[in-house]
Length: 319
Ligand code: GLV
Image (cartoon, rainbow, N blue to C red):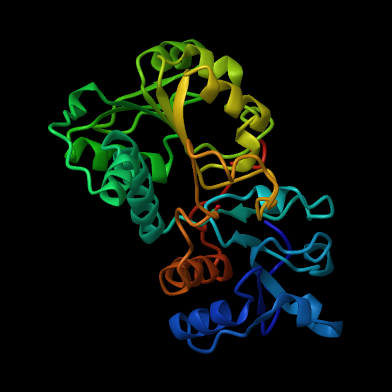
C-alpha cells in the first residue's frame, strides 16, 4: 500500500463524456460527508490530501500529482486506461469496477446480439419493408454453441444466462479458473479445440499484451464457416484489417462490435457501411453512477480502515 491516509482526505473524480459532476453527486449520495472533487480542479496543498482516485480516462500524469494516493479505482470493468499512463505511481493498487448492474447490462447486450443474428432480425425488418410474409423459417437454438473468451464476473454472468435460455456455452481463460456450474476450459490448445466447436465467439477478455490482436485471421480460421463474432472487450482485441476478409470468405457471417481501436469510430471507417457488421458506440455495459457508487463507497471505506478493496488488479498480469 502507499502512504498513510492523509488527514481530511479527498477523493479525486474524473470521467470523460459525461464529466465528473454526476459521479461526484452520486458518491456524495452514497457516502454523505465525503470530500469528492473533480480531479482536474484539485491544486496546491490539496493535492497531498487525495487518497483515492476514481476515474475513466484520466489524462496521463494527473495521478502522479497525488503524493499520498492509496487507491486508483476504475470507473469501468477494464483498467487498461489506467495502466497506459506512463507516469502512474506503480506501487498504488488499482481496482476495477465489479458492479452486478453492469454484468446484467452486458449480458442483455450480448444476448440481444446473439439472438438478433440467430433469429435473423435484420431479414425480418426487410420483409416488413416489402410487406412480405415468408412461408416458414426454422430456427434451432440447439445448434448454437457460444465460446466466451474471458470468464470473469461478466463472462460468468453471461454463461449462466445462456444456460437459462438453453443456449450452450463454454468459457475460456488463459490460465485455469474453475467457476462452479459453468463449463470452462483453459490454455491455448483448449482454445483451438473450443473454436472448432463454436459458432459464436464472444470476447470479454481484458486487454493485455497477451490478448491484444487475439481476434484475427488465425482465430477466425479455426471456427466453423458462418460463425458470429461479438467483441465487447476492447478494440485492441480485434485485428481490424482481418475482419472484412473473414466476412467475405464466409468464415464469419456477421460481427457485432461495441469497441474499436479508435473511438469514436472515424466516419470514413469501412465498418460503418458493411451490413454484416453491427455497430454500437461502446454502450454494451455503461457504468451507472448510482450502482457503481455503492462499490466505490465501500472501497473508499475499506482503504481508509486498512481493509482490502474489491476488484484489486494483479499488477503483474494487468487484470
Ligand atoms: C468499459 O468498457 C469498461 O471497462 O467498463
